[in-house]
Length: 577
Image 1 (cartoon, rainbow, N blue to C red):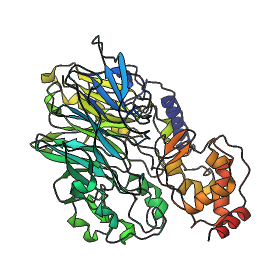
Image 2: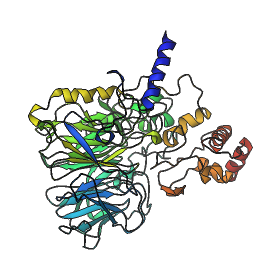
Image 3: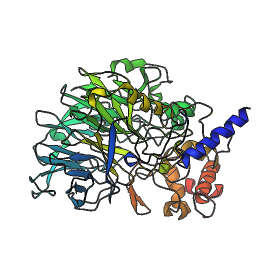
Image 4: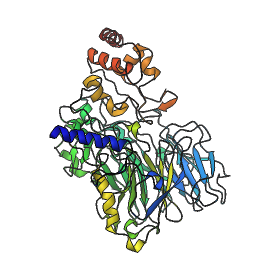
């Protein structure tokens, strides 16, 4: 009987993946033919502004006249900003222009905000602005450099620079930590954390700058908050005049500390923390992380923690909400408009870009969430506002997802605009129903979507993708490679490169062995695309383990290169000692 149920479940999952939309209440549709493919609460409608954009999309901003400005993910010099205009009021952009940026950009260029008549945007290392020209889609003013990240290390992981502004003329910019957990050897199993963490001197926090001053460096700003590993979702809430952020938690609990964490714990932890940020806030990174299941901050294993020990962690800022691990919150918008029902007033929309680091369980999030607020306080659990981006459920590999939500902005009429990173698709979401009759039934329908594989808490046994299956490439690939390069070897299109057809993999064996032994820090270019996340060193692996995993990647994912022998690994290892 149990085997029959497993076969039936597998059959239903196949139907879901193929886009069938007739299901019981328990098997919700994953493909929608309305609203540009999105699932929304009753009364809401979505119009596709543009199907795709060259350079795709990160954050977005909407001007008072309805013009849309998009931060491109990949851009040549002078093409960092994509400007869109709808001239016939049909909801679709019919004029598209590109401008801005002093150099070629990679995947992490992020910010796009309008503040006091200026358009601000960022690359990985520079914050720019233009004075907007009334009535003109493309500004006629010169480009100004507001802030430059002048650290000698240049590019590193967590380099994105989202921005927001308060009501007093200040700009807030995170400087992400160039580390996972401030280990002596970054992302190396068993390596201890540095205490105190020297990275916190000028990274792992948020700095405050004069929004109108050009030519600033980090030293010209003030450290506003610290203990924040990586922040991409950042917004000033004018209703209570506070800064809010949703930070990305650390990675690799299973990979780095397998004696303390299993795969399920590593998929669920640590929490992505939704924080109210006051001047002087310390959120606890790298010493601690929030465990949403225990509802407490616990000591990181790099600092002697075992997953339960609190230690010094009760002194750090607690989150308003702790979302499940690796959901990748990449934008936040406090809704100040009047078009939507009262339920949404002053609440926060959050774009969850989607996990990468959840192996051996399916990837999670890939939706727009909403957190209700009342009188400046969180007024309930998070809600699913817009879903359907991924186009399938479960999401086994990041590259399987059709769209990944990223940018949120409010238009002059109170509509919100949603942008995604894989194709550059943009939706305009409006409310067409009767605001006075907006009922809990609309929210209850969206609440059901929390039962889907890409949102729910995974079942320890049944949702384990390695259950009853041989692990492709052996345990080495499963534990040390799938979190970044994914089970299908295709990476995530942004931080982690594909392994299939990549000259780094199929080319010089000695160089490949050295990359695994020594690690590699970007930026590097793979198949014409730049990547700048760190590839940690794996010298702790045995020669035969390195031989096994390199042979696997050279003979899979469409590759047909010769094997790597244990003797070849030993020879290279001896040469670099």
